Image (cartoon, rainbow, N blue to C red; front, side):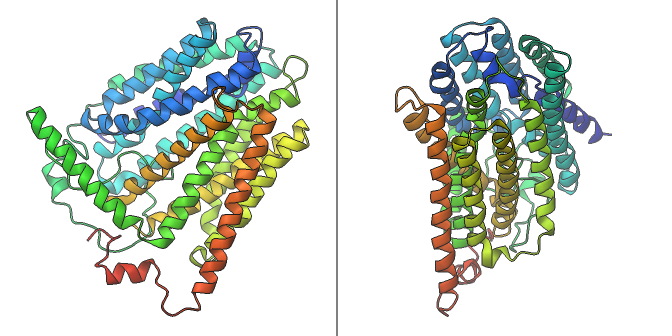
Length: 469
């Protein structure tokens, strides 16, 4: 019962916080009569604020989540969502919408609390089940929200403003839920329990036990990092923080000395950056191809189908009979080129149905590859270093996205129109494909050289630097 209660509450919270009927129509709403903003304001001045705020807040929230024992940060996320959609209903003007994007960036950054909380209240043996429940519910909530929004908009002819109100009501329900969660008495960094400090290190490079997925592993899931017990004064906390940061730095250097792990991590950071850009600005592209003021749009159906197919791709990938260790780089090359073609099709042909189909294929391909990347990275790590590598990869993706946004999208930079942006994004994925094609050729050539060292040889000759012994 002690596990059942918080799991149910987290599932309820995950469902309602992701139930957003207005999400597929956000660009149309901002550019419509309700907000009356121009395309340049929405694309070049409002949307970039989310990227900047997410990057700036990610690391402080990462530490605050653990220090405050998750629940307060979970409440902060729920409050941020309520503020975001309240402003979307009532506020007007460019500055108000930019502030709204900041709060949404805060809500995105504090998502770490959702996936971290459950690990503080259940034993490791139940991680797989509760993580599966929580992650499945969030995907179902997102798909249900997109489908409900499309049905209400197309069939019932509900105005977009009312869809935002429904989303706000869902956020209010989500806000109530975390208050009833039990407060954890331990965390992984600052409030570590004695039994956690006595847990043995994993000494083998075993594959992940599938207790987490590619997104849920990012937040604070480092189980055996040297941490500091709760201190009574600020000086002790400061020393403990420095010890944690130094340990993470040493782990960082050791982990990324493994060449297979480095290759998958590079693809993770590069592709996630491009993926975020495409999904963030796809609605603006669709609005240009088929204006919502003049035609019926079906963004909700597209988001629903792409979410479900992406989840299915993530499940199917485990059944593919592929030797990723041998053909991984070349596979990344082929699929990255496929993603580039999808983006080029959206940008050049400018047919709404081709845009929708390419977008669905693009998301499904990314979900498939990110699942493979997650497994391949985790297979070269001990459990204590999962979150370190996934967190660094995500941070690098956000850093690259910030640079790309500042140069290409932001009005302070080039401020390009959405079609020019997608031409760059397509070229970006094509460059990724070329890079991994060359990497794949080099890897195949190096296998002929008996002196070439892979991650396993490095592990043996350097006292298992990756396995955390």
